[in-house]
Amino acid sequence: ETGVTQTPRHLVMGMTNKKSLKCEQHLGHNAMYWYKQSAKKPLELMFVYSLEERVENNSVPSRFSPECPNSSHLFLHLHTLQPEDSALYLCASSQVVRGPTLPLHFGNGTRLTVT
Amino acid sequence: TQLLEQSPQFLSIQEGENLTVYCNSSSVFSSLQWYRQEPGEGPVLLVTVVTGGEVKKLKRLTFQFGDARKDSSLHITAAQPGDTGLYLCAGWSLIQGAQKLVFGQGTRLTINP
Image (cartoon, rainbow over all chains, first blue to last red; front, side):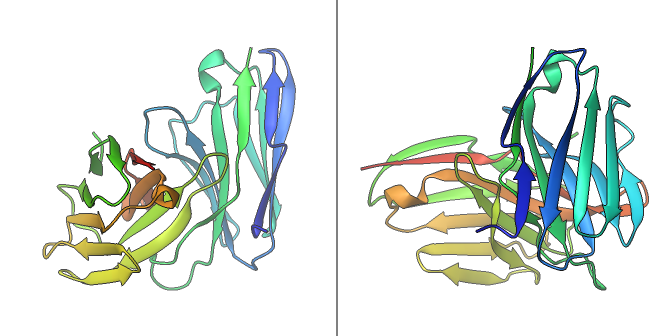
């Protein structure tokens, strides 16, 4: 069983819908991440919450809105998405200590399809 | 501009053959990580290499970090169908004032029985 759980596993939504992706980690880590994985493109970092500070990629459209109520839970709120937003959305966690060499632990992702 | 370039992007070979995949960059990394991702799952860490010239072995998998810490390779000996998956290299890089883990585009490996 993975230490990072994502729900739902699959989501189909229309462009006018509002939905949320949920991630929960049971590893006691202090940093959580959202990545987007599209076909033929590298994993793209969307948002990071590290030591309760949010770091974001400025190229992420405002129709994606993250929320991190505590160190164990992470949400990605979606509204008015476009078909090109269809992808696998991966949540990950890690322990931030002194150096950035510790691995990320990924969930199994939410496969999102925007119609 | 992609920080990490992986090659080949696709590789399909027969069981029992050997193979090498590469991860190259013009940037220096303090460490590089290799992950494997299977269908329907998230990436799972295989190894972290930290020291230039370092070689690490994980059963039939051999990982090497370049002397200049700009590149890495993964060599698989006597490939098995269970080695099938997407292999990703990743390195920590300072972007917009923060350390972020950036990934290559991956090598999709298929081992045919």
